[in-house]
Length: 492
Image 1 (cartoon, rainbow, N blue to C red):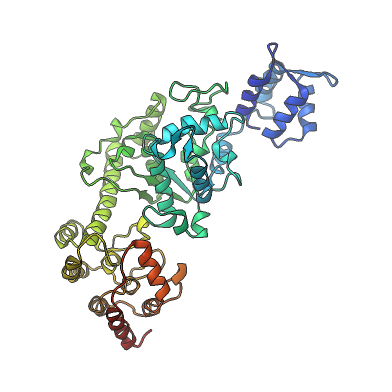
Image 2: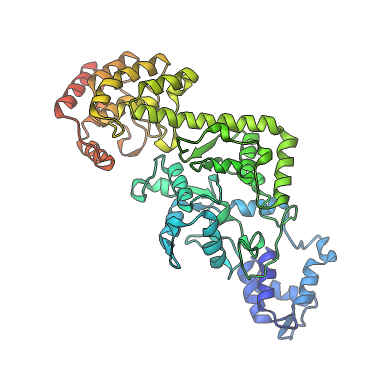
């Protein structure tokens, strides 16, 4: 039984003498527990809070019984679950992408405010806390379909735009930047996540403060209490297979201790934290400060997190690991941007600093590599730049040992990308000369099982992709030249 919500219910409904109608109590307790009504009624009688025929229950007596020292040590009844049990309860409070999209649609304009103009903290204060006050529960428990078992925990900064957080979840699930619902597959819509704003019961945690006013009256369980839900994220992450971070454009996420604590947990567990979001080009990674200067809303949290990091790997090692991770992710985005803009000078500068960037893949771009970006048609460069700089950049990437057979999230190689955009036969020849496999087959999506040539002949797919990207089809002559080359290879 979760006694935090039970206590809140008692306080809201008992009279001035601390009494509650037996029928009301049984109904409320039945909603909050797995016990049968008969067992609850027997508990009321055995506690001395009411006789078998009494119409009212002495709530003070019942609470004394539940929380008293005698019951606390009883082998047959424990007033609250263990730390591990609370962590397990928390872990089961995930949601699907589909449920998140429904939440956004239901609150697009809420009490005169646009959701797109609200920070995550404002969504918690103005939507989550008021909507869950009646049941004193986590938001996911009100979602249609109920809580889900999450496959990914996403860390985020509450000061960032809520819609940026939504976009980060969608990008992680779909492997696309700024995807819409119609661009997601059914499998992607069913992917499950865990967010503290939806998974934590705010009524036993943070509500009732100046920042989050609430009159629920629920007892708060904070650090080190078995029922505290805010200090169990590390235990939860041991059972959640993926971790991601919603990165804001100015890297403020990395100045928040809870984000850093979850990154520390992922680091200790050997998890690869996926960064979702784009950093503004004018923000320097060197502006990141040591974890010692990061902030938290509560001083108790700050001390707890810093002690945990210092006693495990130390501040210096942690700072170094985070800086390296941020630099790596920033460099991946910079490489993708340089290739898409057809800027060989920027590509060469990045490769000189880290040759491994020639095979850097970004999850929010369907795990495409620089060769994929080079093969695609782009709106980030003029046609003359595209024609002139593509071969130059291709040679740079191949000299750095770019893998022409590296698949994206759907199993498509750079040759698939060329064919999907009716691209250059010259580029295809150069990739084949570099050992690109003409017979490679896409492994997922609508193109599953197709070779590059088979994809090239899928007119409808190519046209649809062009429409979605706002691009024009390549000439039929270019397509015929490319197809003739692939067929001549004799491995279609």
